[in-house]
Image: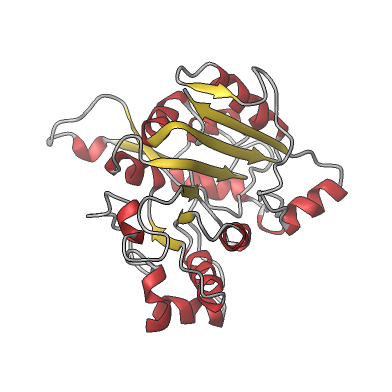
Length: 286
């Protein structure tokens, strides 16, 4: 969720300094709690001689925050290790992760159970709540924020869930490595809205990224997103309604009511109490 005024102070200057945007700042850009991930190379493919000049446009800001003892325990103790697919304290190396269903082959649900991938699960509260509520469905979450990865693994372990696996890394890179028609549902909840116009290229929902997302979905599978930023909500409607291969479940131009299976987070409740809107969209793969 993106309602964190305590970490928004001067964040535009930080974003511009890190990402190299040289245009002047005006106002403050939010920093999303869900650390939604994925990136994309801008421009034509470069040769090895000029590869150092390739610019990567990130859709996330990886940041350092406090890690509590439970999260640290889950990242280091062997009893939680089976939830962590790759190097959760490392650089998000995704080498060899090319079949999410295989992660559940030896577990009770098996590899053929319905599969949900959540992109940028933040601290994992709603992700784990959904997994616990649907034990016959397998859930994979991908995140770059180590404290969130640790907390999510800790909650999965303390609830003894057998239908959860957690990946550290770039969601777009992961999706590129997966087979076509692989996933039943892809979830993107409260991504960074990047509300400044010069940052719009960093928004996860774009035609280029949605081509990668849709490729991995099964026919009839869905992409479900939610945001508390009105401008981004209508941006997503425009992009997704115009994207061949996806159909708006609520009809073109419409939002869907929050489905019962998406838990309401504390930040969402706080936002609604303050008069903020929340917009859900579900698109089916044709």
